[in-house]
Length: 214
Image (cartoon, rainbow, N blue to C red; front, side, top):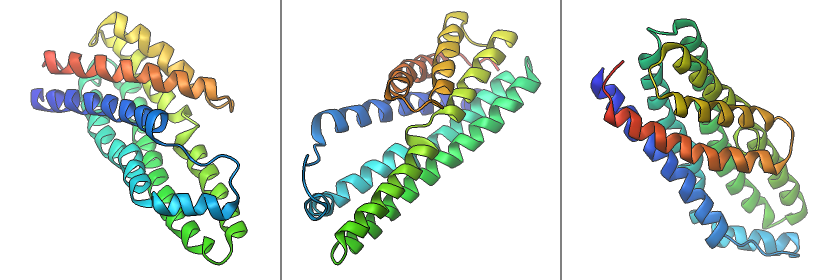
């Protein structure tokens, strides 16, 4: 089980790196043309299709795969001291894994389909792309309720079982609560959740790597 905890620690650190990479990419490198018509916007997307597809894969699919390892590691760590809460948290963790991976696959398939349609019907393609974007945001991009519930339940279970540092669990209560608040469509909650989860994932990763206790 010690090896699983170490692997979970590496997974948590990797999740933090993915979050940071996404913020850096969209904040410093990605700049879509403002005020462009549908044809120009799809021309831009077509030119950057490979890069955007890779970013979507890393942000969603790879993130979800690594998250699955972390969900298992935390369940194993917490199940003795808080069996019910740990099991409930694991359920939400698994659901989050599925939603995140599905979001990435839908984003990439939808991007390719919209770009193909744009060669003949750019306006219809724009409607399609906006629909895809809305679905992706609802499942895992802008709505973090499931992820927030997972963090919140993990934090409560860890406080009950005393298997993770108390200060870390208090931070987790905040992070999880903000995640739940993203049910209200305000960018500020999503941004706070994303930034605070970088801290949470990094702290969790260091903690799991330093400790072999289950």
